[in-house]
Amino acid sequence: MKKIKKKIILFRKYISKNFFYILYGQVDGVIKKNKNYKVSLVKFKDSKKYQIHSMKNTRVYFNKITDVAYINNNKFIKNSSNQIREFKNSKYFINSVFRDGTPHFVRNIRGRVCSLLYSVSATENYWHWMFDVLPKLAIFDKSIDLKKIDYFLFPEISKKFQNESLNLLNIPNKKRLSAIKFNHISSDEVVSCDHPYIKTNMMKDQRRFPKWIGRWFKKIITKNKIKRKAKLEKVFIDRGDSKNIKRSIVNEKELKKFLLKNSFKVVKLSKLSFREQISLFYNSKCIVGLHGAGFANIVFCRPKTKIIEIGTTKISNNIIYSLAKSNNLKYSCIFFKPVKKNIKNSKRHQDQHIIVKTEKIKKALIN
Image 1 (tube, rainbow, N blue to C red):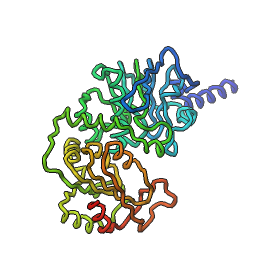
Image 2: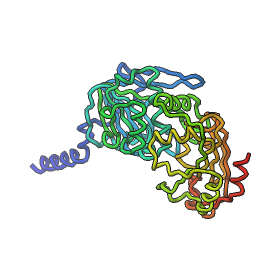
Image 3: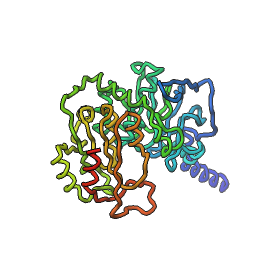
Image 4: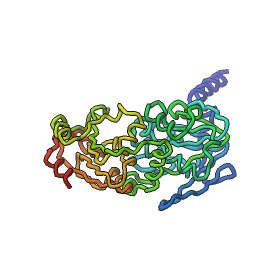
């Protein structure tokens, strides 16, 4: 009798500990290809080939931070999943599902789901939304009729800029799913694709920004009939609305005063709709600002537009430089020494406070 009671206690402990694994099954292997998983290739002019992964009867699990796992019959699909560590897509066995399983209730989504997941960065950050997420729609569109997709799984869709951009791209509201809410789903078919420009290492790959992305974004201007103005603006990006308090221009009032005297328009981009931001950058001849996500909008600028980035640390060939180069813009960066370092040995080199010397800005505007 004591042995039976002991076994019952142990069984209860096992059930308590492994409840979710019993419900959904722990990942118990890896597959590259099978009858439910196929890979096709697409290519743009002057681009690498992108893989499109079609996975039938598959689960998608997003750990809401860095890991996306595609699982078929409890087998981990290695080629389509990703696990970001130190700006790199690490080895597949690092993915959290091998350590934690999939400890969230699964939601069954009928039909065909396009997954645009990568990491948590795009849930709030404008730059990552623009370039980690949206261009994937162009990759899918190369081989799939997007009108026949039942749902699109995005990192998040709660932000104003996310929904406004999807509206301009004609993605129906009823077809949008947030991976924050639907972070573990199963579907009849899931389709995913390669990242638009990152292959393995973000810090290296961002230096080779594909030209096709700029061409694709500019189609939004035409399709949405955004007017071409005769008078072009000079714009300073005001980061006063940024949540990042670790990076700032200490003497920003002085800089704004100087720029206003030189016919610049001071703009907080969060106050503008996505359409208004497109129009502003499309109709500007010069953009000045501190390193930040707002520079994503230079993808809408006309060729030869002058871009002046204010840098906090002297690291050249960054992603803004790469984006400007791929869109045939006239780019320069002015570096200023930090007055105070926020984080010792920080990998985020741009998180510094600086004092801007207006003479250097004046010189850059003339050149």
